[in-house]
Image (cartoon, one colour):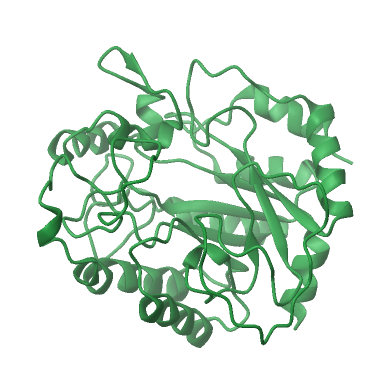
Length: 337
């Protein structure tokens, strides 16, 4: 159980949302998104054929994995979590499953996940990967089509390219893309401390368990967060920017729970909890969002969460050139202790 002990003691980590959406920086054809910038394809209902053209412009000349990870290290963080594939379906690594990825589809042609994994090894940080296991707007059978509650875009699924929801079958996307890509990540990038799944709605209990078994078979010490859905998790990802007033209550690891919210379960069988938070109002880069939190706020939130046994996973949103904004860098370094 060394991996469980490690997570409890880690307390502080960095997350980074970076992808094609970073090029748009929260604005599309003269209109600014009102919410998260990484949701811009859905917010503006950008057709896949047009969104794919962004890949031809993705050449982040200033991306330096060592700089990112050294910043995390110097800020006192113990682990780093990166968006290997977000809801837009674009893989930030060399996927053999789908050519819609950073190596095959861009002039940049470099495996971002691979470089970050190497940098984490170099600087002694644990490495984890975010992977959107249900929403995939690039696949005609991506999930979310059974959800009608409000979201950060026009719909959870890609309803602008694929409007006929009755013809959608998530199991096709799951078998063709989701499961084999998760397998690639587990096999090709060394030891992962965790996989950070997100937004489970359409995914079935059997599919969540299948992903769980895949992770545990290939990397037994890789922790799984609660957003895998259907109770197939090791630790709880609390709601976005959730800072609870009191510590979570413990339950037996043998307790049976049903998935009850997008934030996942509220109780961890191993006593492992984490809040992921933003440094402004968006996860990915939004050029006009200057709502930066102060170093004092970072320290206060970290102390409050850690005192309750909750890890603080603080997100940065690099720009389209691969630069972590100076506002973020300065605040993180001033907040280190």
